[in-house]
Image (cartoon, rainbow, N blue to C red):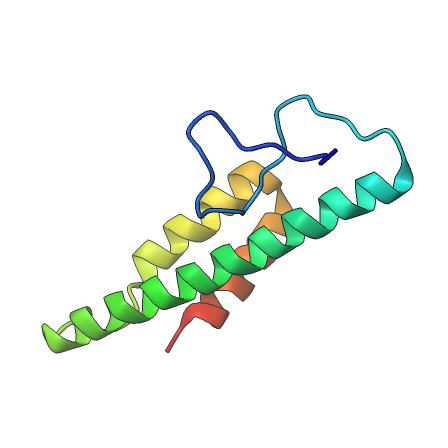
Amino acid sequence: MSTVATPADGPLRSGEPRLAAGQSVTDVLSGRAAIDEVDAAIRALVQQRRDLSQQVQVLRSGGGHPGIQHGRENDVVRAYADELGRPGTRIALEILTLCRG
């Protein structure tokens, strides 16, 4: 039996599981399998974010605007930091770097 479940609003993409609220694992192997599934979903979401970011950058530059909006990026960093603390800042900065064209 899988150690992950989809949320009430459904997965982001078919087959991309998310941990159910309050769910726990019963052994190391199933826990590692669940972590692997979550890691795969994170990688897929980062790729999706990168694709979207590149599309937005093209639209902005085509409209005569700079590709990067520092105020927007600061908001993204702040949101990660608010939810994840100081490590969230580093994660956000890495994601933003990865998603730039």
